[in-house]
Every structure is written in C-alpha cells, then in structure tokens.
Image (cartoon, rainbow, N blue to C red; front, side, top):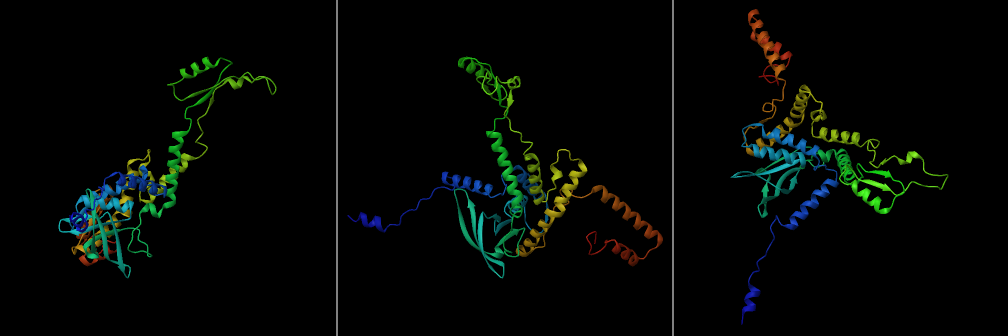
Length: 360
C-alpha cells in the first residue's frame, strides 16, 4: 500500500556511462580535429618527432635530490612540449599526474588548484593548495604568469602553415588523377571502346578514352599531334608545395629548439652532434633548471636535473684537449714555483675556478 511512498522517499541511484564509451570517443575525435584546425600541428610527424626528442632526453636525465623517476620526467616533457605546462599532485604514494586543472591566484602566484585525476572508467576531482602540487610551465607571459604556453602556440603561424600544406597534399594525393592519361582513339564502336578501356585496368593509373578524333569542322580533321596521349597528373612543382612544406617544417622544428639539419637526409655526424648539443644546451637544460627550482620550492630538497651528461651533449674531443692543456699548464706552474694565489688569479682571467661555470 505504501510502496509508492517508499519509492518516492528512497534516494535514486544515478547511473553514468564509463569514460571509455562511445560518447567519450566521439568527443576525443572531435577535440583532435579542432586542435588540428587551430594550427597546432600536433598530428604531424614533425611535431611528434620533436616531442619524442624532448621526452627521450628527459627520460635519460640524471636527477639528484627530488624523487623524480624517469616515467614522471618523460610525462612532464611531453606535456610541456604539447601543452606548455604539467602538473603533478604530491601524494603519499608519489607524484600523480593531473589531467586538467584550474587555479586561483594572489598577486599573480597560484594559491589553490582544482585538479582532475584520471582513473580507469572515470575520474575524480579535488582541491589542493599550491604547496601540494608541482606545476612546471614554460613560455610564461607576464600577463598570465601562472600559465605556460606550448611552442606550437607561440609559433601558431608556422604550425598553421605546416598543417595546411600537409592537409592540402594529403587531399591532393587522395583526389587528384595521379598517373591518369587521355588516349585518343579512332572511330570504333562503343563495345570495342569499352572492352579496350577495361583492358587497361590494373596498369599504373587509369586511362580515359576519347571516342573519336575524326573532326571535320573548324578547318578540317584533327592534327596528328592529337593522337599522342595527354597526362592528367597535376604539376605540383609549379605550386612550390615542396619548398613551402620544407620551410614550414623547419619553422616548427626551430620552435621546439631542434635545428632542421638534424633531420636532413644528407646530414653528417658532426652536424648531427651539434644539433643535439644545441637542443640540450639552449632548450632542454634551461627547462630542466626551471623544473629543479620548482622541486626545491615544493619538496624542500636541493634538486639538480642534468640532461647534458647522459645524452653526451658536449664535445668530447674538445674537453679532452682542454683537460690535457690544463694539466700541462698546472705542471708548468708547479715547475716554475708559481704561488697558489697567482695561479688562481690566472685561472680567473679565463673563467676557471670557484664560482665559475668551468670548475670550483
């Protein structure tokens, strides 16, 4: 009798679909399409190759102080390359990556975060203080010092050009009559023309048949030159598509700190090594220093992240010659009886000694 009242007062169970369902897949596909049309060029092999270089270099980095494993470093590098920032929750079980977040600031400095943590079958959200997260970011603007920007965002024009050129070339090779030709034929029956046309199938490209070239209007029959086949393949060389693609590709690689000659088919060993040193010294190592400072502020331990030594991003021959020269100079100074103070003053002139980058 009172079943309806019990049903009305009982709390209803809310049912939700899994995060890996059909709707989620459609939204993810739509998101990828929108990101591509915005000129991010993340789906191109050029951008992914540069991202892989960042990811591999950080995965090999030497870390002292903070508890950063190689998985976390590789994940942070990939997020920094594609998003410009990466956030990790400092939990009792280690660092947990955040899928998305928003924050509140005071004087331009983050104070609290609302973080979304990904889980299989769904996610969860929580509110954390700034001291409870590691927030790595690059390309910071003074207008938004709490937000990072990805290299492709900062070079959106080159990224858009690369996306447009690759998209146009993909559509051209899909739709254009590549390898097709028109073969003029004499006056024959439609049945014979169809049989002859089918005989060309399986060859390289389609062959279109003209029914007749026996034209008596406009001054007489067609000239003999009209009997030669005409190629229908578009001339892409005049469109400068290859040159435009190479220029856009080089611009995107430069935005990631990768010299274009690193992917040059004719690149030699010395040039490749210089490209690796340039990437490590001028792009990745400064980012690693910023990440080390963030770890020192949040974890309270002195942290160093070294990328140059693990990937051998230095001139080994030059260092060997420098060490040999320094040892010979120290031996000569000892033989000459040079005082330690005079030797230190001489080393300071060439930026060697305590407090310098070359020693100490």
